[in-house]
Length: 44
Image (cartoon, rainbow, N blue to C red):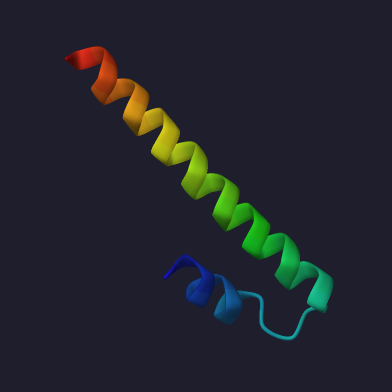
């Protein structure tokens, strides 16, 4: 969903920007998953 919204928000910009958008969404998702796992792991 984030890729879809990002694509609409930054429509018409260079293809290089689209690659940066995808990389940012992917790295943010991985970071959120890791932090969530650490929080849940420490609570148990």
